[in-house]
Image (cartoon, rainbow over all chains, first blue to last red; front, side, top):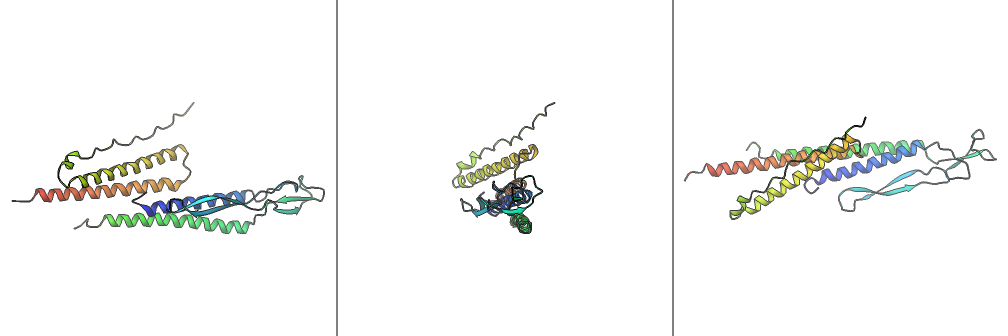
Length: 132
Length: 99
């Protein structure tokens, strides 16, 4: 996108924040997955953002995974509980995820604002000399 | 009952560069720049059309990608029209010259 660079760059930012939103929704959806203590807990997803390879904007370099140990919770009523009455839960804090959710949402909106402002700026440039 | 998928919107045929203008000395640069600009505009509109088809068929992963592509196509069209209007205006000014 050689003519409208800033619009393309803001678009890459919006795509990155959309992936962050996806990661947060995955974490919240799996927040209460209980497993037996002998298996691994759900691992939280973290988006790795980095500058784009072509030098224009940002890209997602990969997904980092949280701890597989999780938390061991005493819940003897759970059918998955071991002899001591423990199950393994993912180590995901809802408050932390909600904070990330807000940051991802606001970041997405900020990038779309950049697209809007850049469009207005280009249209103002096209008005140059219109009435001359 | 099967639903027939919507066919892709075919882009308008490519406008051939004005070959007559290249004959005049110094006219080749502007004509080739104009043809290059039109090619780029057509590319953006094809991209926007493809995104529209994806949005209609449900295979669009990013909503903003379509809106950005259509915004870019619209801006490029406005730019091309502005350049064309200026060129026609200049041509008319020259035609009105009196000896």
